Length: 354
Image 1: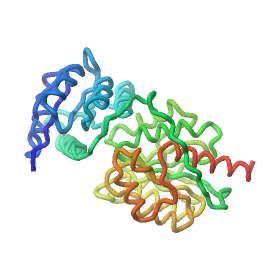
Image 2: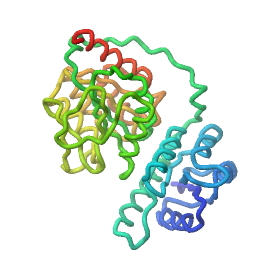
Image 3: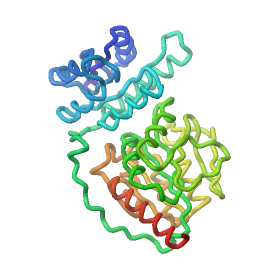
Image 4: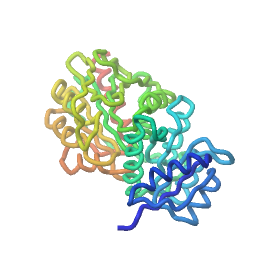
């Protein structure tokens, strides 16, 4: 098996050496070059043809967002954002880079004497290796994307009884979530419960980013709070999110599921199937693995309306693809189709209960 060819894009020589030490310690990874800014990264990608890139955000000449956008338009390569902090300004720039095509974000590990150094280093190595396996495609600027026609959607008759929407996402999920939420509008009737696999430290920033361009306010769910119509609630770091009758949210530190995931989509979907059955909607978006696929099937078997993202629009057709194989999805749609379906369900519910 050939080694993973890694390009490190980072303006600090000290940080370059630190990342090379951590990532180069894995026998499957070969550090093939360094770039001090986005302009150098563009040239290095052409010359070195790396398998994967780690990208800093704040750099002179050309920042990580612009470098990511240009690389994904000209020489598509898996990109992992390695962030120096999870502060508000850094996080906003980070998610712009993910919107431009970066696959994942991780915090740069602390110094070697820090108690979390080993765990954070392992997470960085694992993320880089996993993302290197993804076959990315050329991205065009979002302004050039032509809207696709939304297929007609048949929904069951008891639409008026729907009380919530549960959404699961992983790799490639943040920009899809943003696209869906900003299309729902201020009159959207249902609460949205969201599990997005993301590195520890970034979920609060993701919630703020999702809220910034949407009429749907999104925040981290709190144990015991009641989910409100037209609001989004995200699972926090290290806890499963679940819901019970009365739309009461709960958090659990039960063991990780689906290859070590906590929060897991499966945990949320199971609680929705158990407590709400046909009064719910389940949506499974782009992501690696199969977290939530079987549980989406359980939701459908219980009468829920179930939707999976289509392969063409998915960065990774793992989770939704597994759901499709199982017959778990009543509809398989692109993000704009998912948003249109959710809007239609909300309007139908308001017609029955004005």
